[in-house]
Image (tube, rainbow, N blue to C red; front, side, top):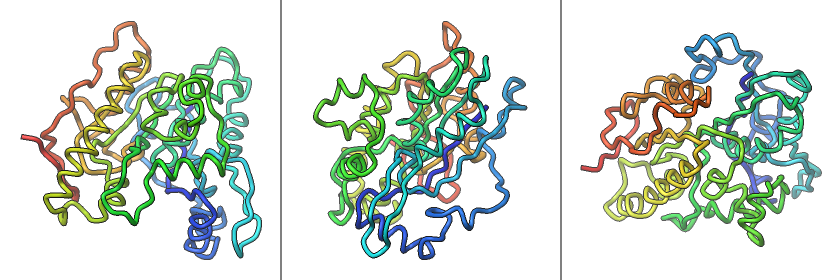
Amino acid sequence: MDFFLQGGGWCYDNVTCKSRLEGNQDGTGPLVSSNKWPKTREVSGIFDLKDEDWYNANLVFVPYCSSDAHMGDSDHQIDTLGLKHFRGRRMARAAVEELVGNKPDQEILFGGTSAGGRGSMVLIDFIHDLVHDTTTIRGVHDSGAYQDIQPYVSSYTPFGEQCKRAFEMYAPPVSEICREEFTGELWKCICGEYMLPRVMTPSQVLIYLYDSYQLSNAVGKSPAHWDPEMCRYVEDLFRPDMEETVADIVSNPEHVVFAPACYDHGIMTSSKFQSIKVEGKSAEDQLLTWLPLKEEILFRLREYLLRINYSPGFLVLRRM
C-alpha cells in the first residue's frame, strides 16, 4: 500500500498561521479546509509504478489542510480567528491505522512531497506501532531537505528559525536517535538537513540540488534574474550544503538518494519520477531496484550528473 502525504507549505507561529488562514479564501480554501477539495485527482509518478509487484497496489492520497506539515496534533488560539486545530499527525496516523491496521504481511510505502515529505520524514518511525509486526515499511521522502542557512534576502525567515517555531507550536514526535543527537536543539528533528540522515526506517530520499522552493524564497528572484552575487550564494553556500546532506543520508547503508542537479521542486507525483534520469536511471528505477532490499543494491547514486539536459520552463545549472 502506497501512502502519499500532500505538500503545500506550512505556518509556524501565530502571525504566519493567521496570514495563511486569511489568505486561503477566508479559511475555506483547500490548504486549510476540506470543504473545497476536489472529488477526484489525477496523479502519476509513484502512483503509476511500472512493476508487477506494485502495479496493483492500493494507493492512498492523504490531502493536506492542517498547515502543520502533517506533524501536529494540537490546537491554538489564532489572533481574531479563534481556536484552530492543527491535526495533521492524527490524520496521517489514522489513515495507516484504518487502512492497514493489524493485517499481517503488508508492505507499505510511506512518503510525501515538500511539506508532505517533511511530515513523512518525521512520522515514519512512529507508524510501526500501528501495524502488525510482519508488515514492512519503507519511506519515500521528496523535496524536504531544506537547509538551515541564512537567506540571501533578509525579508525571508530562515528555515532553521521556522523549524524552531514550528517545533514549539506542534510538539511533533522525536525519535530516540534524534533526541540523543540533538539534546537541547530538538527542533532540528523536524528540519530536513538534520533529520533525513537520522530517519531509522529505510528510505529513498528525493532531492533537487537546486530546490526551487527554498531558493525562490531565499534569493527572492527566479534564476533568470539572478546577478553574480546571487549565483555565488547558490553555488558556494546552498549547493554544497545540499551535497553534504546527500552524503550524510547515503552514509546510512539502508537509505538511497536520487539527487538531480535541477532547479525544481517535487518529483514524486509527476511523470518526472520516470523521465528525469541520473546516470541513465530514474527515481522509479532506483526505487524498484532498492525495494527488495537485496544484499547488494544494484546501484546507488553517489555521483550526481551535472549536465542534465532538462529545461521545460526551468533553469538547469551546469558546472563545467
